[in-house]
Length: 388
Ligand SMILES: Cc1ncc(COP(=O)(O)O)c(C=O)c1O
Image 1: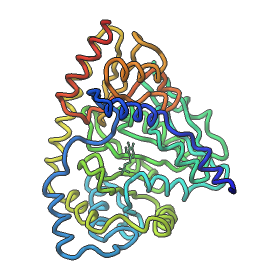
Image 2: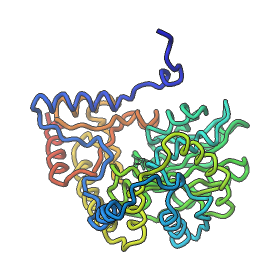
Image 3: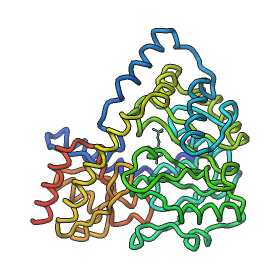
């Protein structure tokens, strides 16, 4: 047999999958595993959004939609950017809607990258960024940020990694996995570096609506940034719509044009009725989002002090998203070892923190998009494990 793709074969399987497989096997064997490993809201999609999809299907909206997204959803996205951040984007050529933000981030990497082009990715980072850049033909350059300074972004920490091959800096706020929300001075450091070095900023704002303290900074709204920033967002987290596969990007027309070529020649488009429902989600009252945000906040406010009260456990206080980044110095400074002990001895599945880059070594990530009753049981089990 002739060899298969060297590129795809070079992407290492994720350690998260190994932990998840083990969790599934234990579950199948009858163990009561509490999974804190996922990134999927435990809420159902709000009823008015689901109804809008049913209505669209009944009305015959079941044909190929425009590849770049339907007019109503592109207009709703442009209106949101203008209303919330004062960022003017033309819905005709500066907005692309696709089957999830994940695909659009990949399409953007492909739109930016010539062989050898480097994309800076700040640690700890969402696990998919590195393979995405590799698959798109670029070179991921990961920038460590120190855990003992709360992973703070500074100019000095990024600058040494900028070369004449650097094309873009990727920013994710609120962050998966740490839940950190970028501060004005951090955003300013990135803005200055981008302008001085003529870089694009890829701003993944997927958890924008899930902020407990501080305010979301839309990178495109900063002076001089609209022309060099691509904003990624979507419905998965804010509206509990992960399975619908609906995401969007907004930014410079030239990048949108190339990403749209990749989309139209591969996955074609997002689903027609998903986009119909997505437009309704953006344009109807946002109290459903607020209810979910308050629920995540209540879970965080329970979990963080409860975990920190356990000797040998240290939990950062996330300002947004729905993850906790937790260290277990009482067990080990090795993430995999902690994840394995939690699984084997406390029946808790967590994501090892070193999956998010070396800066995350020692941590595990807990998802609090999990019912409060399970979170309470998880704390109890951790208390027992640490007392043993
Ligand atoms: C930081 C971040 N960006 C993007 C995505 C992808 O979202 P989507 O469901 O729109 O593909 C996720 C999903 O986990 C995420 O955590």
